[in-house]
Image (cartoon, rainbow, N blue to C red; front, side, top):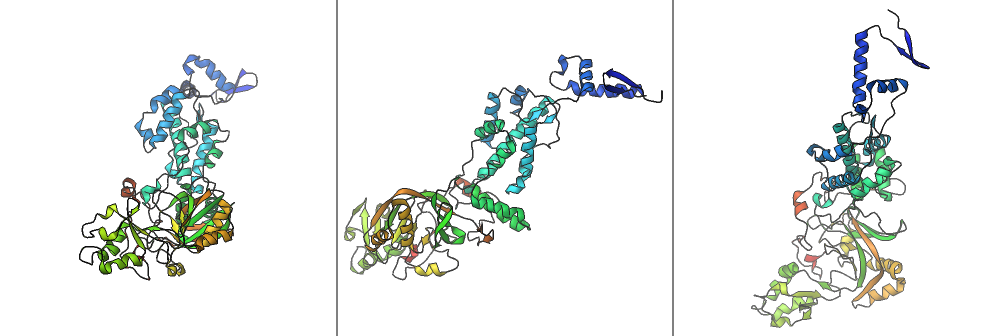
Length: 514
């Protein structure tokens, strides 16, 4: 007694005998209890397991706990904070899955699970908050079957939340502001689980879900270098806005960035043309959306909004005792307006302007010097009924802050822009485009190849020299942190934006000047 004596249990293995029999017994009981918790422990004699444990380190075993996983899927604690589509995908996946757990082994988190947790821990490098993803520490070693199943489910749900955050953001843009008319493309959660379950590097799979746009990459690099929390916050906001963009912008596309007050034609990743634009005022903001340009109209006609007719035209039409006539004709003649009913021109002298139902009439303004649309109109059908056009109020283009009037954006040098786009789409020469504009007659040209238009709201961009460029937050969208419930449940209606109280001037219907 006093000195430990080696006893040979197997060739080349020594077991030390403790002086204290009670301590030895307690240690053996604890080891036996741990081993008994592993799958299949009750099927083999404890003595054999102890001998195996002494012979060599335990090898992590697959966990066949699919039935317990299916049972735990109904646990409200695990489902808390998860997107309904993600819950449905996890339920469908594990209902069909008959193999072992994906992210756990008998020894704890599997190598694949470790890789996933490691990538989630680096979420901050991608502008995401790591605390959003509720996962256990990588060292966690659950032994109870219920805990193992719960851990498996938690990691799978966290993967789907990360995938959703990486590609589409965790908040619908329209829930932040009615200005946004975007529907981010999120990879289907069922697809994510199926693909990541067989991925050789699941951490790389997660990282690959982030946007591939050049500007997103540049903003991320700037984020890693940023020194202040304010700078980091603004970079993250703009990175999220790239998550809402279409995955593919187009080989050639029109990019109108509202805070920059600029429009760019981008071809094969390079800027082919740039022009100043005027966007809507804060009371009538230009929306954020993407749509395909399908038509360019030279010398466009204009359907005047009824709100403008009620405010600026109808009072003049009522000046001559209730019936059209006398001096009232001047307002229609001045602005070259015709009155249509169901697409057919009607004689305004036959209308009782005191009792007329304006909703049944359409007022069309002919091309000309007072037509607020100017010489060229660019059409890209969208839910907001927004389009780009020329403007006859040229003074707006000379200002540093070009946000005023109605929501439709107005572009400088529209004929030049039309020539660039028609050369790309229809193979037109610059001269041919010029002739169409100079004729004075309405000419609508269908694009042979539709060109994507992206109207965006980026207050931070990084140029080719890696310099961070910032723009004014003209609509105060950078300040929004919480979803706007009113915006989420009350989507904007086309043409519902308020119209500034302005009077006609400079020979145009300026009150409705977009």
